[in-house]
Amino acid sequence: YMRIVIFPDSLGIPREYLPIEDCWVDKFFSRHNEDKIYTLMLPGLSIIKIYEYRDKIMNLYNPDIIIFHFGIVDASRRALPDTLSIVISKIKLFSRILRPLISKYHYLLTKLFNIHRVRPDKFIYYLNEIMSLKSEKTDIYFISIAPSGEFLINKTFNIKNDINLYNDLIKSVCISSDIKFINPYRNYKSEQIVNPNDGHHLTTFSHDLVDKALIEIGL
Image 1 (spheres, one colour):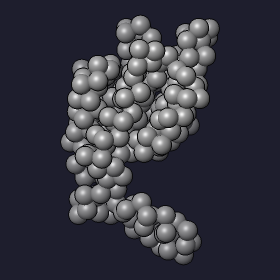
Image 2 (image 1 turned 30 degrees about the vertical axis):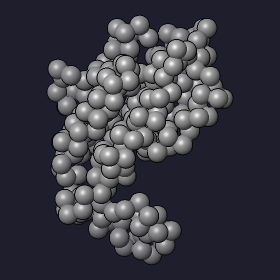
Image 3 (image 1 turned 135 degrees about the vertical axis):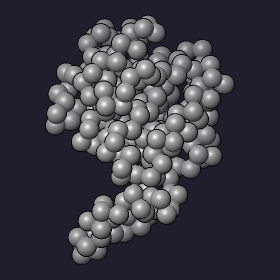
């Protein structure tokens, strides 16, 4: 058997409109029922968390294959710095007053302030550190960030270009590290790929696309 570790953000997990059986991760499990598969499935997963776990991944799981599927949290501009958002969330009065305003003016705030959870230069640094986990024993695969739908485009400034930029960063590091970069979404329109209500999470159709792309490369 193989040891496989999968790190998806919310693009790999079930949602209110999407049962677990329709998720690509569950489909992958079904095909690999004789292998040992471990997952860290976290909404809001940032490359920072992967970077922090990188040594534990190798030392504790000893994987043959690692599959990564994250990036939107780092690519998408933030309305406020994370430190300020944490402070606001801890003060209930501030949170009740400011959260609706931040949501209402989210596009304007992301246009005024070019704030990313992880800047492009830091993102490349983390990527290179993570990709160095590839070895004679361990293969790494990276699924691209999904495109943005209209809801997300209208809510976050420059999101289409930012997703393209961060995907290009991932792809360039994958090429230089001889790692497979998988883009299941090419040749399809964003309205086929992402849920119209939030503009980013995958539809049942696009979960099938991810699953088929993995099958095509032998996974």
